[in-house]
Length: 288
Figure (tube, rainbow, N blue to C red):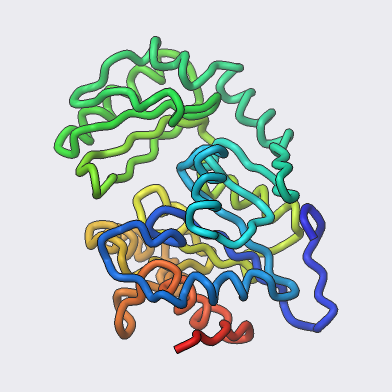
């Protein structure tokens, strides 16, 4: 089914489920997890007409490690590097989307994310992330949280002087208590990658559900695509998502798990949101 439009022989509508990884599908935060939830989601991903994609800030190598470590369900697509790369997954073979790569290459005129560090230089309260956390179309910094605005302003000014079409994406690493600033080509984002997957599969927003928990998920969460903010999302992310969705008039498309019942965390939040958005796709029952 990889790379081809989702066909339904049962008459059911298809479902494209796009999930963030860390602290969304992967229960690697401090909040408790439902021990059955990930297995139930794995069963759902195997159902006819269901297609799973990951959307993450991780690069391909770190996604592969996470899949092995957490026994994640096999995706058909991976949107990696916060949307700077899109892969079609066929078993062990991952195929980068050539058209997406060409689009981003034109925006950055073949510049490389690591090379941009030299041009951008130091930012207030910031330091470059490790080389293995960057890619051709992703230049990333750790930023002291109280220097968010100064660092972003300085980065924008330097990118304008370089004449590069770029976007800045801000999120917070709660465990490290530090900000994460990703600099990408203007089209690169989780939403941009999601659109690539939708086009490749022939799936509309009505048959797509996105799940996330952090700042780099906000664009999709408030885009009007049916979305889920899992219960373990930080309160400031919940507040920003609600505010942005109100401004965009997309609040009806956003399921905020913390506002429903026990505020299900991680994969349990994904399943709860799916029950809300797609009651025609009953989620598998747990073992308890």
